[in-house]
Amino acid sequence: MTSAWLLPEHIADVLPSQARRIEELRRRVLDSARTYGYELVMPPLVEHIESLLSGTGRELDLRTFKLVDQSSGRTLGVRADTTPQVARIDAHLLNRQGVTRLCYCGPVLHARPAGVQASREPLQFGAEIYGHSGLEADLEIQDLALDCLHAAGVQGLVLDLADSRIVEALLQDLSLDAARRGLIFDALASKDAATLALLTEDCPDEVRLGLRALISLYGNADVLDAAERALPPLPPIAAALADLRRLADHAAIAHPQVRVGFDLADLAGHSYYSGARFAVYAAACSDSLVRGGRYDAVGAVFGRNRPAVGFSTDLKQLPLSCEASPHAVVRAPWREDAGLRAVVRQLRARGETVVCVLPGHEQELQEFECDREIAAAGDRWVVRAL
Image 1 (tube, rainbow, N blue to C red):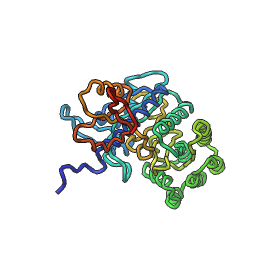
Image 2 (image 1 turned 135 degrees about the vertical axis):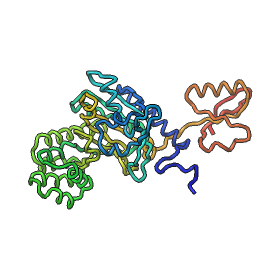
Image 3 (image 1 turned 90 degrees about the horizontal axis):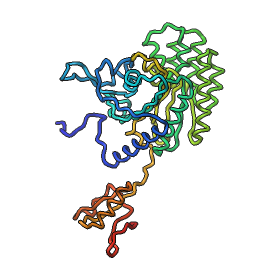
Image 4 (image 1 turned 45 degrees about the vertical axis):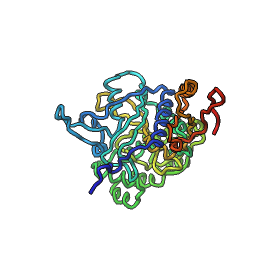
């Protein structure tokens, strides 16, 4: 018999210690975005399904929970990704002509988990910049993503760069159905040379050899030089390699503590991105912490095909890669004493955490590691170290 208290698979309660860390991270990353001039938006958790999935791929459709609105009888969807909603806000509600910088932070729900250990209810934070097609927007969003991770206290960052234009340029003159294209992308992503050879055996030599070369084009900055030698000199490929070089050079100067690498066969979200893209990893986590890049077509279905670039991360996963920062807590006795209550109020007004110990529960503060206490000193109350 199934327990009534058993939660669905990949759904979990967030307990006090982790919840406190997640909330601290939420405040830090939102403050980081604000320092760059990003405006906070709060899209709804549910929308009509035809609006929510406008322009998105089949993958997002399969990850979206669907339900019937009891008021209208129409099908609603619970968002699985906030980016399409923010694109709708930019296109229809704000409708600005110049550059727009937006950020968001809220839960999303996945019908299918993204990985074996992944939650189906991530807390998604992201930032997006609309209206600028130049690489300056890519550089800014990359800087913001790294600064947010630095603010969160994540150490040992690795920035991994790629560009969707390279594969698209190799395949642009071929008449391939969607299924075969998908299989080629899967073979590239898994670096399966044998399957890739079978799938491309009837392709022109330039395409076949170029795709095969992508499998080995990963590593440090030498990858870009190797790519220039191995790939055909098509203008989109040349532009992509030049942009990747500039993104890497900028990161090396602006974030010297971050290691930069390349994987030109990384095609995660290939139907979504339109240019340079990046993922950020940390030494303590095998999965990417952040994914982002350029997706200029994201607003096309809403009638405004504006340049767009952004990133997102799951704040529930970040604590796994962050060093836990000590949280100073003051312990206070429970008394109806005006002097004591005044000291408690003063400390709390300064942002300190003060836990009053209820009578008979003096040993029940395991959640908080108190480093000070309020104690009587004659006719005064003072704060002293423990």
